[in-house]
Length: 276
Image (cartoon, rainbow, N blue to C red; front, side):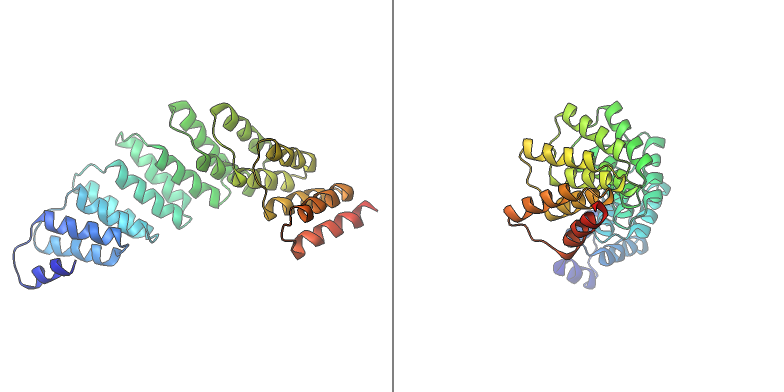
């Protein structure tokens, strides 16, 4: 970039390839403001942008969650009658996802279909993650079902985001458990995040038996539980006054030398009080 800036200052003629290389360097360094400066310099120099120019700039904006800038650049891409690439769309969707703007993410996703760009697993996962942040479980499930129907590659991260959307959307434990079954059928690995989201969904839905069932399943497939999982199980037991179960889980935590915090203890104490 220093060499590029020196060349610019010396008034030597620079071509689009040089600018694209500089913008790509900005993208790698998450320097979105400098990337936009170069885009503006190109416009003043009457150098035409290409897909690489705008895609790299969008990626620079995506890394810092500048979704507004990313959307404007995507609009500019189409106004210039350039066909946005899959990478361009994914970066724009990811920028919206990082800022929690799920509606914008879905609009960009729909735009892909309009110009017949087939979304890949990254585009789907970014949209599902955007929906997950706001508990939009129905939209997350719809996107996952589209992935299954289109035979797009499924992974643990995508399922985890969908299960988490069900948990945040009011403890949709039935849907969460259904997704566990789909993961098993698809041969997708279940990890601690999967179980944490599933158990939390059961806890919110007052389904302590289902929470304990998932906890037992963790032991069967040798997934190591974390403190948040134990806390969610104890909280599920506490809601129904299942104090004996809550104390059993607390003892397991002690045997495993897990960190016991005030929230966990208070939930166990509350279970004992309700069970009297």
